Image (cartoon, rainbow, N blue to C red; front, side, top):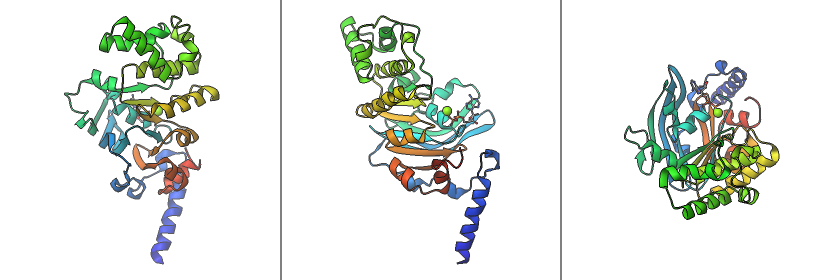
Length: 292
Ligand SMILES: Nc1ncnc2c1ncn2[C@@H]1O[C@H](COP(=O)(O)OP(=O)(O)O)[C@@H](O)[C@H]1O
Ligand SMILES: [Mg+2]
C-alpha cells in the first residue's frame, strides 16, 4: 500500500517535471528502455549497440542500443533535438563529416562493426543510402541524377545503364511521370517528384538499407501520401529506417517504432504496441501530444 502510494507520488512528480522546457526534465533509469525490450521477430539487418555520441563536449546520444529488422520499416520518433537525425547518420557514418563529432559503441552490419577505422566508407554509403529532408537533386538531367552514382560505382554499358535508370525510376514510382522527359533537369520537377528522384538515385546503386530523415516534411499531403505508399513498397526489397516528426506517419508506414527523448532511447517495439499500449509513461505522454 505504502509502495503503491509512493509510486503514485512518483508519477505525479514526473508529471510535474515534464513540460516543454527540456532542461527541467530529469530522466530516471525507469524511463529508459531495458535490453530485454529490444526484441524483433527476425534477426537484425543492422544493430546499434551501446552508442554514445558527443558534439564537442555536448553529449547527444546516451548509450543507445537498437536492432533494425530486415525488410521492415523502423521509425524513430521524438521531440526536436532528441537525437533522431544524429542516430540515423551514425548508421552510415555520415557524422564522420562533422569534425567536432565523436562517438563510441558498435554498429553491427553484415556481421561487422562499421565503426571500425578499417570500414570502407564509400562501399558502406552505397549499401546504406540516405534520403534527406529537403529533396536535393543534382543540377543535372533526370537521367543523369540516377545514372551518376551507378557510373561511379559500376561503369556499366550504355544498355545496362538505361535498364538500371528505368528500373530505379519504376521502383521509386516516378517512371510513369518522367519516362518521356528524362533529359529535362531534375530540379524542374515538383517537390514530391524530386524526392522520388532522390529515392531513385539511392536505389540505383543497389543498397541494402535506406535511411530517410523526415523525407516528407517539405512536401504537400498528396506528395506525402505517394512517398508513404512508396515506403511500403520499398520494404519488399530494402530495409527502411525513417525519422519522422509525424506520429500518424510513423503509424502508417512503420513496423517498429523507437521513441527517443533527450538523446536516450525510451521505448522500442512493434509500432502498434507503442501507439496502442506503450509501456513507458513518457512515451504515452509524447504520443498523446502532451509535450513535444
Ligand atoms: N552538427 C552539429 N553540431 C553540434 N551539435 C549538433 C549538430 N547536429 C546536431 N547537434 C545537436 O545534437 C542534438 C540532437 O540533434 P538532432 O540529431 O538533429 O535531433 P533531431 O533530429 O531529433 O531533431 C541537438 O542538441 C542538436 O543541437
Ligand atoms: Mg532531425
